[in-house]
Length: 258
Image 1: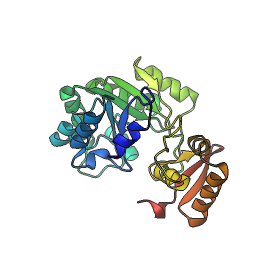
Image 2: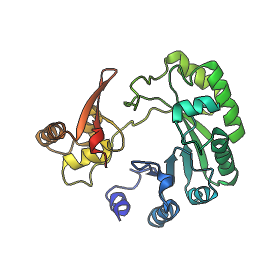
Image 3: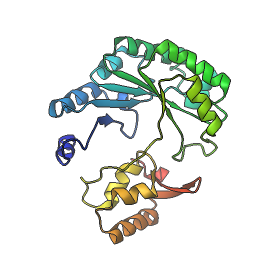
Image 4: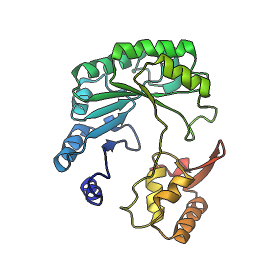
């Protein structure tokens, strides 16, 4: 089992959590509950699931996620209009149904519910939008709220992170339990791959990766081999380099997503 091999390659204390993320929505997997239980058989580490939360309206999905120690659904809006503008859900997933799913899950869930809010400039960082979101959070009663910022290249190039004033406004309105969490900090464990090219592709097909993160994560590989692998990714069209606010990100080319 890949998870068991990866855990075995690390010393005790090096890993804090086992997290289900996937290259898509984890709760779309019909056996997500079984996977969580199988991981728990081989480790005492807590298990978390990062989800968009849209399927928590289904009782069977809530039951599957009950096996996790922490669930991190996304909630970026406090009104139906803003929810549809930001998340673009299918017609069957209404804002009301989405919220009821989150609230029902919290009522029956034994683990920690950590709501993730992606803060977007001029969309959900205004006082009006944040007060609406605060009211919704009061209805759901999560254990924590984590504010994320769109520092990685988003699907829509016009998406911008909030300024300092917007961030402070969000922290003040959303409550004392709010923590500001910047995505994709630290390094990635790429020790289980035979070559740096496969290691890089395994990450950037899920989300963009900063150049400095790539270099840090592959520090045990020959620098010349890493440089050549990066060049090969560009030449083959499998990857693209995106400049966002002066920071270089490596991302999979749209035509090469699995």
